[in-house]
Image (tube, rainbow, N blue to C red; front, side, top):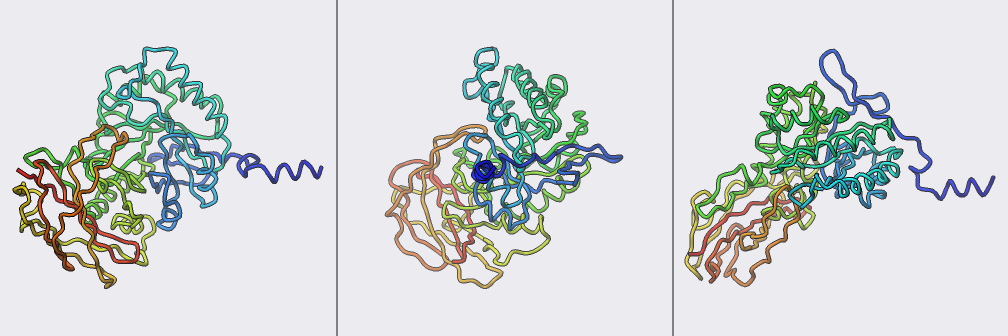
Length: 419
């Protein structure tokens, strides 16, 4: 008996814990996601880092895109009282998967079945996300047959957690495919950025009658913004991103709470995608941006103890990004900015010059970060920097980070072209 007791103590907590039932309840007016019989509207952080900060900001859930090596993550989420939308990376066509290849499809199915058996009873588990944006630029609709097979397998093995699949935006033909071929998908995930406020109406126009959630939201997508004459997308400042996030949440996720069961901010962390600052709500230096402040207010109704700086303006030689700034090789340029901090913290700028990224992928696939160009700064003040344009012809970006010295920062970059 003592040996058995010792063994139980040595096992991971979830190995002896009971699963917590999650279900979708249809109400007179719409839908609710219930966990242990209580409403669980998703206040989600999309990512696997900064979990303590997510909890402090008011999150109740996190989302992963792959299940591999997530056992410790599930334990940590459970310790913090966070649920996990656990992802299966259903290999998309753009990465070479052929959904007419029965052997490859079967091998993928078997891998995911093992994961279901491994994680299905973990108390942190919220739902199974079967695939992310498999519809992005795809042609072979047999992928939906594979997703249905996985969803049915999950229902057969796990009666306690619902299934979803997450699509790239929302299109009528994709919704029809899922409605027709995937009856075991319980609710739909939609990754959407600049178009988020149109989602509630599109869901209804396209005939989706089950609940849905926003699988990724925050910035305006790099494909949705104005571009320079040399086709460089113009990134919004962290202040502009935060301003838009507040209104977008109110006019989409919150507004449609009878059918929308919540959403996941993307990305709760940092990543290189077109630039190192486009999507992350934190920086590579682990500083929070104003996005974290806005999300905290949305989820908790409270202001954070320390507010991030706000950018008022940023220019090169008096011009903004949309002015299609050009320079001669080795030309002396002046970058100026204005920023404020509500807490009165002294602000300090950091500058970085990068060539425009050439490693461009789709669907959030991994991109390499361009290498910094050093040695071009000539002089700096509290609100400006004089620098030499690179000697080599091409597209570049000047990045500005305005830090408050207390772990918060404002960011923006300006693309320019050396002729």
